[in-house]
Length: 558
Image (cartoon, rainbow, N blue to C red; front, side, top):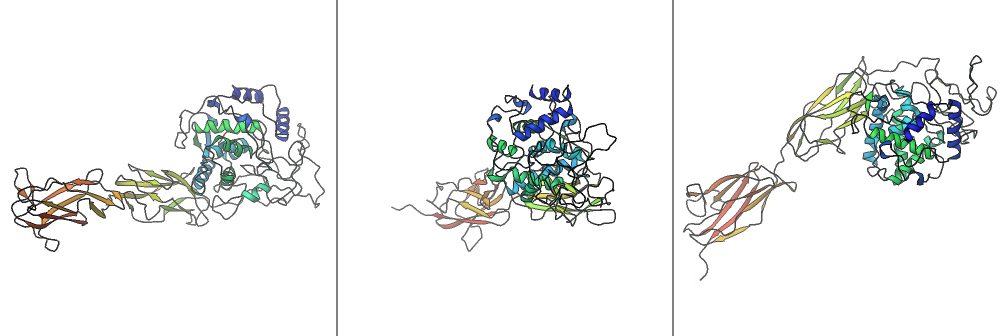
């Protein structure tokens, strides 16, 4: 019922201006939200949310406004978290391709660098939804940078936090106060600490979704948080915005995305309703003024614009860098993928592949293209996986246009499969690597029976059992030949002495066997004739590993 109430409140008689004032007051006061805390689990609620305690310090966004619209009551069709679903179902469940790739890449990177954090990409998606509507529906370029600035209001203490300028206007164009910047809405002072280079272009840009998603993930994982623990999860979210309603809203979208989502083309995502960051056409100036012909009242943005050239004058935007009147300079567009290796990727069962699949993204002239999200997927019947256990990963090309898949780890299943590389969200021909897993090679044969003794005309009381291993791991299906020989130095088979029996009970001094699922081969009983002396039972695997067991035939002492 909470989700339905929230949507009616924003779509009913309450005007946009009143809604904006309510959210502003809520953010400024850090008061609990109006959404009940006993929401059912299907809508992402949690009865303990009201007890969550905001962490100390300035929040990531400076408590800037956010989109308060909640997801529909109808969840996506598939009760799984997958990017492989068709682009159907509720429009709100669609996430733009590049934005989704950035969330998945951040999850993968943190799974390797902070494995105890357990950051799910759906949490980044939930925060990205309420902070910027998934970068305004995926309005980003090939490198993941927003096509126009996404700026929160001036944080001058009027309705919001009061944060003096910390970046000299580098990111927000304001040299007097800070503003939240980019698809994940970092204030510059927080970005200075947590900024990351997620797309490998050598820059840390809060306007780039790859950089911002990785930085958000690093922040959420700070302090050794385990986001699979409810208390740590709530603390991390509240660190973004000190508001109970914010916590409830993010948790609701988090639960919604965990129930399923699908990929949509960049620029086609659904923007939420209600107050949020500055509109796409908003100037990066800290004090924008509406046109004189506009019937709407001017937005409340703080102190008047200082005189030109004064200490509060923002830096002019660079051509093509957020200036909506100047078209951006053309950037390289990926046209093809080229493999970086030739031949087949190979490994022994249970081992790591020595080479990694990789590609080079190129434009029409053959020059490298940076910032291209490349999806590597394992296809075919195999239990091989990338490091971390994933079968699908997304990696962004660096300045050299190169993207390498994580190390492949072979499972126990032998055979062939393929690694397929595609460009996320672009119609570029895929490339494939052939890969194969071969059976383990036995390196040791062992037996508890080192030497056996029997009387003439009798049999050896103990049964010989051997085990084949490779690196200490049992190897099944290993062919072993067992032969009675004259001595360790003479591999000829004697005409008399210990023997096995064939199906007709005739003496048999050599036979073949195969290890079972546990790597064990149990030999049949060994008999003796009237010949006394010392002999050797030699066991040899199909790849030449040898084990000798001494057989002594002697009359029992009187």
